[in-house]
Image (cartoon, rainbow, N blue to C red):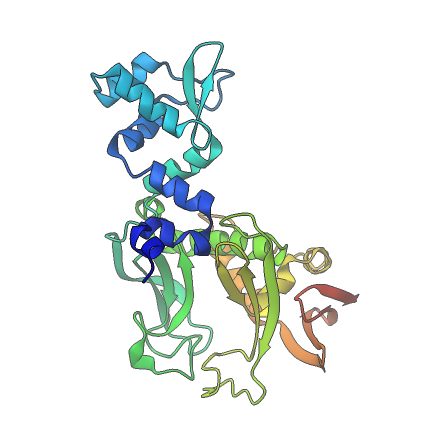
Length: 331
């Protein structure tokens, strides 16, 4: 080990992986007073006001800090990346990164002590027609069937917790108390569509960076219990952020519902493709629409995947290229 390695802090050692600016930000926040300052400004922050800067005296009073010089030192450290000083009043306001940080803490991101035990909802499993349940643990909301393997028929049923997963959606604990189990099903569908739509359109929903897009295809797929991929559907679109590593995967059946030609096709047949929070029936309906889509691999090198939607004797077909972009619409 070199002398440089011996003097390098653990935080500095991670700079190559996440970037120097990110490690500097973590270092800035490694102080209780600075975190208290952010919360004190947030408490008095009014985003609707033309000038929502918080006076130094108000920050000092809320933080309970009796050393003005030391408090100014900490504010100075936060300026630039997290805090901005308004010259006209001399007050301080949170910059967007600080607002996102405080919101993440308040919403419960990173806090895994919330839990919802399996609660039955009025939606049947699309694969075995058993009643399904909603549950929540470690920041994830699960819709599952405890009578079959759900979306993973080729994997060990006993190894999943909960068993029989149908969807697994990151969900902030703050919203857990606001919805009934059926309301959670609709809310999770809205959250999932929003995140998936973002990556489908090429933007990471977490950090706004570009995403890589590709298809995985199981060549000898068995939909009744594939031991090769373990999944219900043999063709999966993947999206991965180049910066923060955010990853989403989805069947192209779902992606077809984002294309305006498909939305228009269903609209012409009097069918809505919209999911609304609090509207459990809309979540059930749109999930069933996607399941009815037919997926066909129409090209190997490069990959081409077609998705066909049918209604009242008519159909529309989208063709995706290897980067999960729609390259052809046939109606």
